[in-house]
Length: 99
Image 1 (cartoon, rainbow, N blue to C red):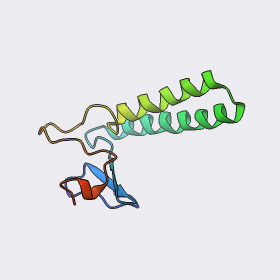
Image 2: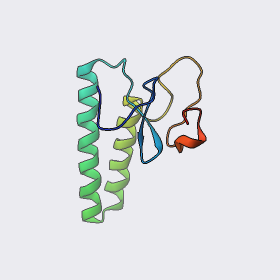
Image 3: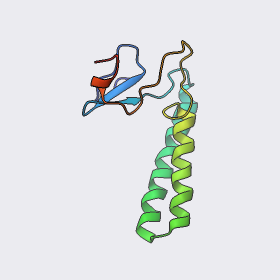
């Protein structure tokens, strides 16, 4: 699914302001991916609400939900590719082989 940002030739990362960000796992079924995106968006709304309420417990729980959704999408945690290539998530592009 093409987005507003350029992606690396292998489709593993998109580039924002010179930094690599891991793409979601393309092998996820569309309905599964959409459900995870919905969970992620809800978790982000929960983070915003927790910040507005100044509730540190709620904020911690909401951030854990964001993390869980991102790991399930393949954007964080173990890489979704199997060729043994290193993970350059959040690296400046000039410090990677993608430069």
